[in-house]
Structures are given as C-alpha cells and as structure tokens.
Image (cartoon, rainbow, N blue to C red; front, side, top):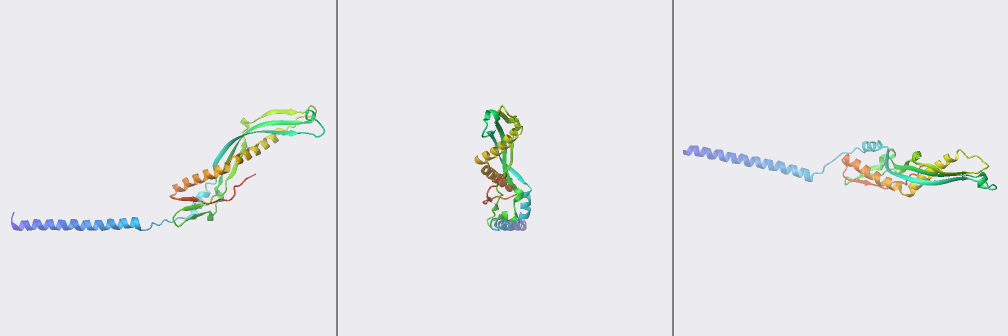
Length: 214
C-alpha cells in the first residue's frame, strides 16, 4: 500500500469517527432533552368536570348493600269489656324480607366534584338510603291465628301484619347498619369506576345525613 492510499484510508477513518461522534452527541442531546421533558416538565391534563358529573349521574341508583331479615310479629284486636276468647282476633306472622340500600347518584351536583392542586379528585356523594324493602311471600307465613268464638276473623288482619312486618324488617336493617355498609361499598365502587377513567387518587368528602325514606 503506497503512502497516498494510506492517507486516504486514514482520512476515511477520521471522517467516519467524526460522523459517529457527531451523531452520538446529537442523539445524546435529544435523549437528554426528552428525559428532562418527561421528568421535569409538568404534565397537564384537561378534565371537563361537567362531563364527569354527567357520567356519574348516569349510574343513577347504585345498589351497594343488601340484607335478608327474619321477623316474627303479632297483631291483635281486643275489646276492653269482652274477653279475647269471645271477641278477640290475633295473628302471629313470620316474615322474611329483603332490604336493599344504596346511593342515588342522580342527585350529584356540579359543586360536589372538584380537583385538588395535587391532582386528587374530590367527590361528595349523596347520602345512602334504603332503595327497596319487601317481604318475600314465598318465605313468609302465618304461624298462628286465634279468633274469638263470637266473631268472624278479620280478613284484613294478615295484610296489616305483612305491612307491619315490612316496616320492622326495614327498621331491623337500619339497626344492623345497612346504611353504613351502603356508604362504604358505594365509595369503593365509585373509586374503582373513577380509576377506570384515569383518576389515580380519589378522596370522598363528608356527605349529608343518611336519607330514611318512608
């Protein structure tokens, strides 16, 4: 190999090295800028709260807790001056019923949803309420019936016994804390729903007093 060829080869090597070095510097600067953008530049996300409120409202009545309650009640008719054995009427009723509680999300207002500076989504849920209470007729029955010898049985007494049973089943579920269960389960379900919409942090604020629908 003559001297001229050697010089050309060296020149090519130098040019290739310079190209590779220059390319490396450019790639490094681009990568550095990208990393700085990802790590240090704040990421902005525009949230339309009106749309979010609409999505939550569309869930409407969210059933979040249920109880099955057994109740034994007695309804009697008596007369002060006549013994029950002659004019009384008594029915003992065994009732099994279901109570369902939840949250009516259609009641959520615009000011019940807001976002904190740290990105946390704040939500004030409507109070939990009993949505359904009913007697299961297939599991309920008259245990005993006593009617005085001098009167006819009141045909509406069993109906009233069922009505009283439904009220007592409802009250029993309240005593057992069905509304607290509905609140806790409702918050969990809503948190899961909001996570699917991209909200990483969700905070539930104090609600109003529970609704005890008659």
